[in-house]
Amino acid sequence: MNLRQRDRINPHLDLDTVDAAADLMALNMGPQHPSTHGVLRIKLFLDGEVIIKAVPYPGYLHRGVEKLCERLTCVQLTPIFDKHDYVAPMTNEQALNIALERMLGVEVPRRARYMRTILAELQRLASHLLWLGTFTLDIGGTIGGGASLMMYTFREREPILDVFEMLTGARFHYNTHQVGGNRHDIPDGWAAAVKTCMDQLAARMPEYEEQCVTNSVFLMRTKGIGVIETPLALELGLTGPNLRASGVDLDLRRDAPFHAYDEIKVNVAVSNGCDTHARFEVRIAEMYESIRIVRELIDNVPEGPICSLKPVRTVNQIKLPEGKQMYTAIETPRGELGTWLIGGGAEKGACPYRLKIRPPSLHAMAALPYALVGHTVSDVVAVLGSLDPIMGEVDR
Amino acid sequence: MMGPVDPALRDALAKQFPDVFAAEGDLDPNGVVVPAELHVALAKTLKESFGFTLYVSVIATNFPTSDGETYEVATVLRNPTTAQPFWWRVRLGADPQLATLYPLFAGADWQEREQFDLLGVNFVDHPDMRRLMLSEDWEGFPLRKSYAIDTPHTPWR
Image (cartoon, rainbow over all chains, first blue to last red; front, side, top):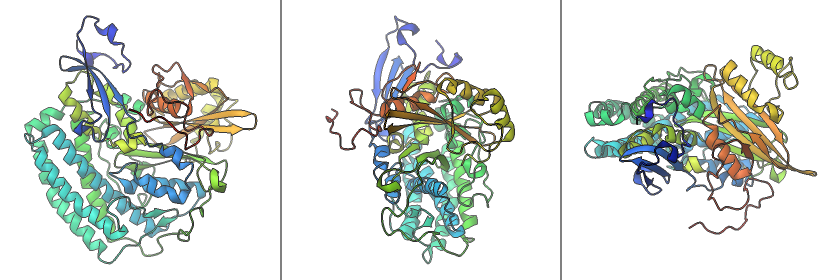
């Protein structure tokens, strides 16, 4: 039975109708499997080693963040948002603050917008470096050169965290954005540190890329694996690199600009491969592009204030208007991170009435029942790694 | 921001759904309120005739009022060519039931399950209406306003 030749895989397949006589095995992958990038359980129904049906069970990290958001004031929310996608906290807090700013109609000074752009691109690099290391480790191990590549990418990620620490005082969970701008101004010597870090990375990136694309084991394990065709990718709501690897030229940085992206040119990487290798290619191309953007901006940060509102003094100094609701989205390393915000909640409007987070990783995980069918158990880690999910963001 | 809606799109929608969309002016930035029976038809029109093929999100919200519970379900789609988002809302009563968008958008599968899980909005004809995040024996729907944040629950083992 060639499962991939059917028109569309049915994720709700009734196994009895496939072949009642087949001796299928149900295998739980996770929730503690090291390559699930968090705690995700996938129940696999196997015929031999071929996957007939895959049922993911998210929710092991569900912390009730949306309920919590209704009890915390807008000022208190930023550090909570840091903890959703713990690999890219910087862009997460930007997503929240942009939503609040657009609802309140607050302008952000140009200097803060440039700083946010640089921080977002540095965060994209840090996030993609972590992805590159873990992805190659998952699929290659020592044979594919994976284990050693992971050490390299963590080494490269370190200086990026160092420049974040120079700016905000924290290596993670920065809490550096606030409504109206940023909290921490650029310290002396920061631009030089960023440039050194970018030079190092730019010099070494081709080597890392070559380690993968010249490795036949790597190519065999990624090409043609985990295909998500364009119409399905759109229907599922895949965004970011996963969608662009399925041939859709959509990047909110260019198409619905936020920060300072309307003042610079963003070259968007697109691939028509739709498979695991295409997702690898797109992310690698994005890393080169991020290095280019950071280098372009770092010397051109305009002078001026970094926040248009007075600094945060009390937790309920930001009040949201009642009866207003809107959807706001920005492009994070993982895709479109959206928030549906309804104003006028508790504490006389200082808390949101409802805050729904649209995590890109949750949509990527919803693609698994389609992408895994017809492949073998060992391909699960390759497909999962290429979708780059962060379970903290999936479950919230 | 939903931003200014393309006039051609607004006119076409006003023609097809005259009771819902006005022929003049901008659409409600909070999202046009659409009767529940037009929910699927509108999504189908947007997807098939206007290129809103990217499924973005579905958001249910609980609004307790003096005469009982009400719910709103907002749906967000995006046109991948223009990057324009579009959203609309459906108002539901105390027993929230709404037709599923799963036949049109495969992504609605998990998103609607999550809203069912947290708010108890039942999506009719959904193939697999189970809880997504919480354990299956969880009692109540946590994102309803009547659900206290400190409600005790038995630890899951």
